[in-house]
Amino acid sequence: QFLQANCQFIVQAGLIDYSIHFANPDVAIDWSRVEQIRLHSMHALKCPICLSEPQAGKITRCGHVYCWSCLLHYLALSDKAWRKCPVCSESIYKQDIRSVRGIVSRCLKPGDWITFRLMCRERGSVIFHPKKDFDNIQLKHEPEHLLTEINTQQYAHLLSADDETILSEIVEKEKYELLKQLEDDGDQPEACFIKQALEENNEREKIIRERIDKMKNIDEIKLTSKQTKEDEEEYLLPTK
Image 1 (cartoon, rainbow, N blue to C red):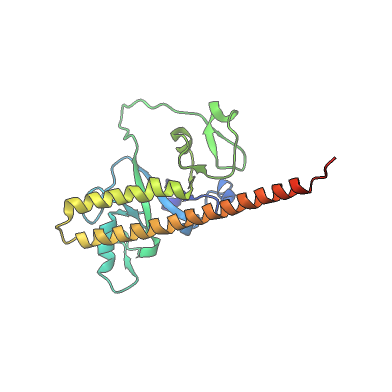
Image 2: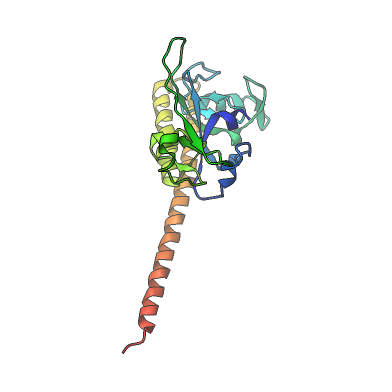
């Protein structure tokens, strides 16, 4: 419920119909389709285990953020398939953790000036935009793409990402953070869990690249089939 109400969800593009989420914001998002969660906060995120900024951060279904290696270490200390969240005691399953990006918003204090913006939305829809832009926007009941303009992204509850974008904006950035962490803490006992996180990151990258190659093959087959059909139609065209 907390995540549903307070976060942005990056989901895989084109797999299922997301239109129901634009009519009813309380409908639960299919967790298996979530690639990353964006968590807006007035303060920088901190891992509850090491008390540092999360490295290649992961978020649990209960909404708590940890370093990937810290979470793997914590889960490894039990023979069960799950452990209680150290913060709220909700059950944490390894397969349910997701990538997370913390976005620090402006922290307001008494006496600050605030600029309000009039927003507008269609009846029966949860999609809203600034009133001054509303008449010029073509409304659609599907997630905005992750690489759209920031001004459009900030009003979206769902953002979609194709496989290439997931690789460049999520997987590769996590790998960079893990490699940097391994370089800094390679002589620490935690290093084995950083390496485990890297292995899982590589496995995720492999799966995504296989999906990309599969889609390229399908597109090539479609293109070849279309070209063959056009050639046949041209061949069968009657001559004068």
